[in-house]
Image 1: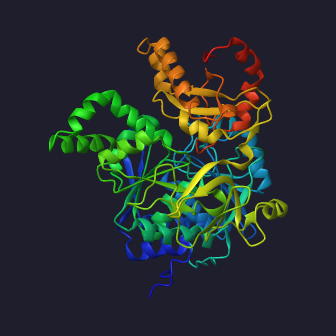
Image 2: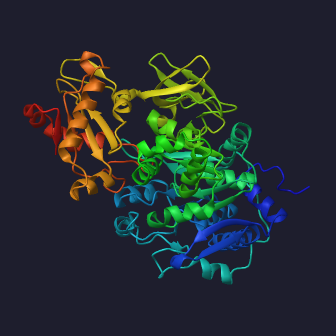
Image 3: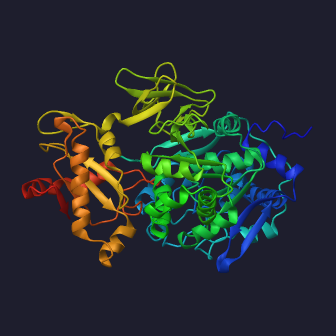
Length: 562
């Protein structure tokens, strides 16, 4: 039996597939000019062993923090594996960080070396990050990196002999420090062991029947635990193939190439797909065609083929609720979206919808081995096999976020139905008080408003105002249509007025919205309004817009265009 057969850590898993299936393609990486690079398990192991030998030659102290900055690529995963094989700890950095946050993470984590991956300063924060890199921090460039004046991965691989003696890690060893995206305050360094990283595998196998026959497309940030768990961890554990997206402009082509059997996305993209299809095939036409026997099935199949999802057997959504009408639309096409829920602190391993047991608006049952309860204040508390080792250099914060009996305080409020499915109803600390002294929970109101196809992101706010109000950010497509005269502003204003009235009719008096403000600026990760997982940074948005609230209130209009 192979010494790696236990698959007790991701390094064991990787070396097992390299030993048993060296010629099987593991990763497919798009290259400039429309070419692709295929990397087999054997090729991957050879490169990782050579990179690990180079890292060993640097004589860094054991368990040194080594940074990894770049957009998703095959070499991001190879660098991660090389860091572990050399006996060190990976500190992934979001490629969309601003320079100040990147500098803080590098300093706080005591990073001694940084791998630079795929970056161009257009789709990421490289231009802001580069000036903040410490002058004495050694760098290694992966393929597709913007720096050619530092040691290159390809040169290191060419001149270094593979590591002969591999010391495998224990499940209890620290593998990575993942810095939270930080919807408020400084990011916290969440420590995960090799054991917690592998904990997700059992649940994926038992609940979703993930196997070696699956394929995935990697495009959500690998620096976040969601992509790292569902793509990197799962592919290493089960041995399936991973394809990478090149850039936004080629995303559809990348998806067509991958033909994923498992597709993991966020509501923002599921909504973009839905709107894109509606633009080419208007909903009225869909309704007619979908209901014609035989032809309806062919049209639905064609829609899935064009999306690149005709081979998809498992579609996963996470991070925020999707409007019920969009969920139903996908279900009608033959894709039952599985909502999942987790946190950086439990490696994303908490809850997931089960096939055939989906309840719209709920994130599903606990994953195998997970315990969940609702505290007296309505907070969701979870004990998971994926639970963190703690926050790096912050034992007091670790103690504050854990209960005496080992449950993680998630900060989310929730409720559990009779079948054991969890519904997230908001954040414990997101409640705000209007000037009348009544508390408002913004998330349930945002979910009710989140039904208009031209609106991409919503924030309900209004602390110290007589009544709450809503901020609407239009999609880029809607803004372009307005600018080009394809969309009538007066018609859209009336639609928003009608939406405001219909939602207010369902709310308590103190929750009723005074007005809607359509904001000018796009909220992005780059300008700090959204986290890397596309959640709103409520404190940043409020700091930017609340100063105008009195002036908006004085206008006495139901819909205001900024």
